[in-house]
Image (cartoon, rainbow, N blue to C red):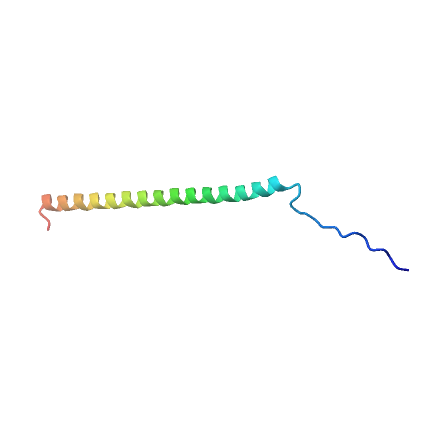
Length: 74
C-alpha cells in the first residue's frame, strides 16, 4: 500500500532562453533611448517655434511703432 516517492525535479525557466532574455532587456533599453531622443527633439522644436513667435511679435511691434511715428500718432 505504500507508494514509492519519485525523485524531486527542479525547473530552470532560463535554460534555453538566455538569448531572448538578454534581447528583451536590450529592447527595453533601446525603447527608452528612442523615447528620450524623441522628447528632446520635441522640446527643441517647441523652443524654436516660441522663439520665432517672439521674434515675429517684436518685429510687428517695431513696425507698428515706426508707422505711428511717421504718421504723427503718439
